[in-house]
Amino acid sequence: METEKEEMIEDEKEQTSEGLKPEESSDEKTSINQIENKENTQNQTVTRPMSHRVFAWIVIVLLVAMYVVTFIAAISGAGSASDLFMMSLGSTVVLPGLLYLHIRLWKHSVEKTKNSIDKR
Image (cartoon, one colour):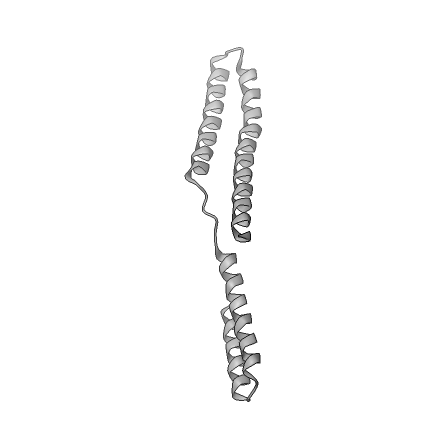
């Protein structure tokens, strides 16, 4: 990326030294600015709220706790061990799915808000 900028700047210097019109060099400047703007927008990261991390840790703790309880129930010989295991398997799919859905909806709302602000 840096080499492209340097090459464009060198080309601009050569063109101005060759006696080209100032209009052409201003076009080069705008194209350099456009490239820099594209790079800046690509490098921006979306900061996610702390709630996403908190929700993720809650899901992890719940899943681990469910499997530990299921393991203890299986060792103790409780009759409900198979039911607990099925609940744990279901939760392994459902809880991360809900977390993923929450994050996607948040991201969509942030993009929608950003687009509405950009249009103003």
